[in-house]
Length: 466
Ligand code: FAD
Image (tube, rainbow, N blue to C red):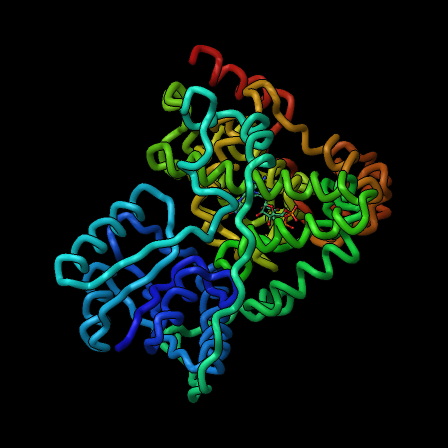
């Protein structure tokens, strides 16, 4: 008989419990991926959809080599999955769990429907370090502060990664995600990424060998490329958090002097679990402030400001550099994500959900928990968020974290000739400095769309009475 494994955010062969279970019972396994229109399931944005296509093609070929067909369908999973089960005359269905309230509701209903039809269904952990319900405060409540969450998490046993399931005879490999046509802009993104399970593991190994040592200091500097860039691979489960955890711990085990660097890296990885913990325990975090009092903020309707921010034309160099990096590569370094988000939600006082949606569409790593979780962190409405009075000054932040202006020069080439002293603040540069650098504000590069000082005061005012 046939077993079905329904793949979702776990596009990998190793450490995939559902896939292992589907292949281990002496039956033929068929894998299915559904481009879902299921109620409660958020469809990927454009950049993530492009990544997904590549990831599916890569996984389809790897599965075929092991004798497993990958079938790709589209529609409401509550209809598509039972249809596929009938088509293959399958008796068992396996999947790895997902955590958004809408996703859980959908999965519960689908499971009940299949069981009613006499189909056995089994679900597994596999996309987080620990299941959201397996970690709780002393009073048995969900965590709302990161540090105690991390203290607890690091003491918990993290399941060791499962091996690859045994391989069967190869079958013919063919293109599978055929209804997708890569848009013209995706060629730009393609130049920056290798996609798929093998690429994810190569990236992890390279990071641990070459970059980890500088991680703690370098991760804040956008030009330094010291972070792992594993986020899109994690988003689609080409690699699991458990695999990363154990590989990093092995580095510290072999060389104790690297323990601090490993701890710093794993604590960032734990933020991902923390955001999933919030996603699991709260209402829709992409649309509702996690702290309800923030529902009272009156946002500005500022379409032109939003558009300037989106296009990297805000007239604030490090912010524009970040937004252009995002547009060109589908990625943005973490500190610059914070600065761009802070300018929008605080200085411009534009609803953070507009920014979240733009990131959702443009990021290859756009993630159900991490994107809204971090936007709410910046906006102040998240759990353990940045305090409301902390409003980044993007000029001084630029001077501190992009000291020589390398990042700005890379992404905002029209400012490249400015001396380091003015690269982050052309609006206040003396006229002769601008002239020499070929910069005409308002012509070759925009004047700032917002005054940082008065907009800071306006943002503080907006949250004062909450
Ligand atoms: P590394 O520093 O190498 O970290 C390793 C892994 O740890 C990351 O891949 C990620 O899974 C996790 N991690 C690191 N920092 C964070 C963090 N602050 N919160 C949660 N997990 C973290 N991350 C996403 O994965 N998807 C998103 O959609 C997303 N949107 C964001 C939006 C905003 C406004 C901000 C401020 C941050 C956002 N982040 C998001 C978090 C963070 O910026 C990225 O995870 C990180 O930059 C990815 O690069 P990396 O893989 O090189 O990170």
